[in-house]
Amino acid sequence: MRPETAAKLVILDRDGTISVDREDFVKSPDEWEPLPGALEAVARLHRDGWIVALATNQSGIGRGLFDMSTLNAIHAKMNAALARLGGRVDAIFFCPHAPDELCNCRKPLPGLIEQIGARFGVPLKNVPVVGDSLRDLQAAAAAGAEPHLVLTGKAAVLDAADIANVLQQVPGTQVHDNLTAFSEFIMRRAAKDKQPLHDFSDFSNLD
Image (cartoon, rainbow, N blue to C red; front, side, top):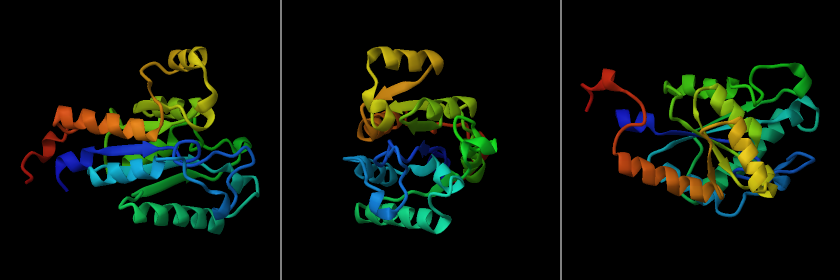
């Protein structure tokens, strides 16, 4: 793997970022619905050479609302829809725990993001983490990654004062209208930089 390819890792939330969020949880494949343009944005990232990973809280498992086989079926539907667009998600990391289980992987804690960094061997500094809620941004910051807020899902109802409050709580957060706008931003930035997002000088002898 070339160094610049290894550096291009992006971590996405699922519900509210890629797909429609539901107050009563997404409990079946039939209830899973992509947000307009979101799958196309993921496909563009994939075609541009980005490793796309998901970090998603799925406490519906811990609450007894659905089981692992159902979650797998939901993700199979998502992956099939992405494949039709020439895209894919390279890895899905999820927290199955209910809030009262006090795990270290439920966002806003950084466990899921740290697991993704370890899986791909990428330092988390400058890795974009995208979500629609404060806890997504807090998890990114706690992991030392780069927080990005999309104004979809839970964030769709935020006004200017609400957004300012979020930015005060998680300094350095960048704001985008949706996943399409984020993907365009991050690809433009990478093209402009024309440099790996991380220091892979130890691999300078590779082709």
